[in-house]
Length: 424
Image 1 (cartoon, rainbow, N blue to C red):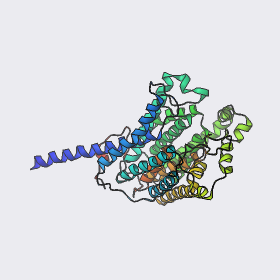
Image 2: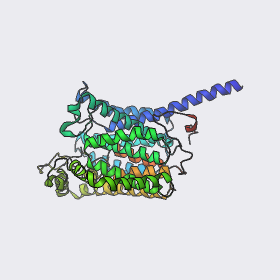
Image 3: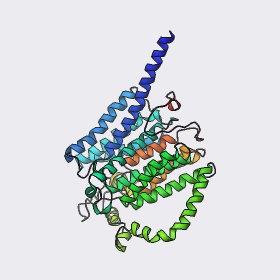
Image 4: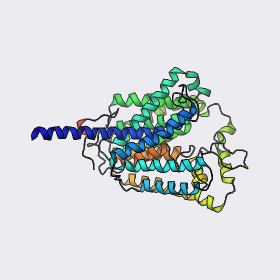
């Protein structure tokens, strides 16, 4: 009997581990789907084939999610609830013969959210499974960017800004992942969830990649989000207080000598006019606000677009909007902006209501980072890395404890005795 019980226990353990690995794979597929290629790769992959690979990843993720959550159990939460309402509004405004692409984007968002709903039973785990899955995929992406830089420096650094070339990723996207990786690993180190060596091995290359992208928004978002996360830990962690004191001394010592270099880096060779209109962004924003639309479209939007100016009478038609809030206004209307704003408010209030600790700090970092980056980048209203970032934040604030002594974290994703617990 004991031997039979032992065999049964080992079999259940293997099945359990396999399901956890499958959650990580699903997360990777979702992020891969959000990275739809818009330029050519150095790999011999036709652009259409690359697009099919990216879009097909979502349906593979759906099948895998249904395989590990056959009963379709889901945890109720306001975050995904508000996003689901936003997706329904997007679909409602897209099925008006606006265009096949608009309808597909809305349907894709609903499927994307359904997969996230299927993963909610794995939220709030002590081993931070969702966060680890996100970090593993981000590090894999950054590794491919660095590899592409060594293989083809000319294509990876057009106009002096680092892009992804093995899998095409614009410099702003690379900066997003680099800033997020550097910030999250720093917060994990402050909370003593990773070692000094592991933190340096991730943070230093990520910061170098971020600087090579010459992306100001991502740098600002990372710094401000780190400050907010750090202040949330200031009274609870001696390491945080030492780091803040050291940072103040370093800034005071090197600020003056480094000022010319910093000014040159931030300017990116742009003239005063380009800096004032945010590299042409404000022109696109003005075009969106100036577009005359029916009252129904002002309230509910005109359906999900490719985040470009959608006005046939404007000379800027098709130009990237590069602002989540204005993209949402165009595609999902005033109601869409209100829903996303409510989602941010609920996440912030929920995070601030938690006791000081790692999960609160990590969630605050992600929320503040996305809030700042969304001002000059599109993505908050659709299936994008921003949606996954905020989902990670929502999963973190479901943990009842914040002390961090009962949490585990490891990279790469690997099971070990302390990280195994019974699913809720």
